[in-house]
Length: 166
Image (tube, rainbow, N blue to C red; front, side, top):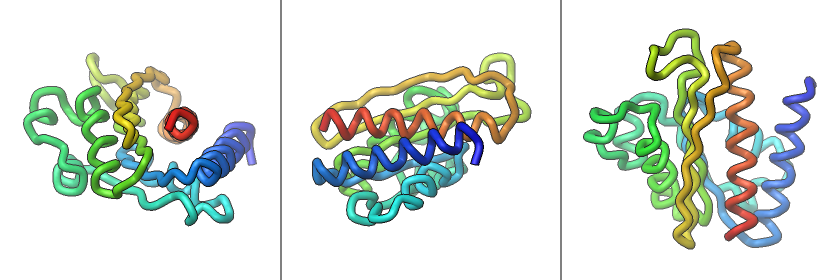
């Protein structure tokens, strides 16, 4: 296990422990990470007490169908955008009946464009108490796997902050 994997594992344990203590149910909505956040959470024994479900919504159609993301938002801003990250988190929160949900949509690479380069990732956080936040990270063109790992770590940090504020 490398240092980032160890950090991810430790964060996942903190998220699950904190959620259990607060009796908070969690949901995830992932695009570019393809279920890695859910995978990190479910590696923790007892995670089923608090982690309800994850949505892997890699395509635009999945974001619309599974999470209720408005297709007009995707058309106007693109899938990798603040409004889509926000709607993904809110959609996961609602669809799962969860207390805290996190979303990730980004360009892991290779590729991208001048306006949306590889390494650009948007995150959303939504809670049943009405908190909704977004976060933009520009990890850079550091390689697909590294961007995905950095995104998982960031998503777990956001999820922990949401649990602690719920």
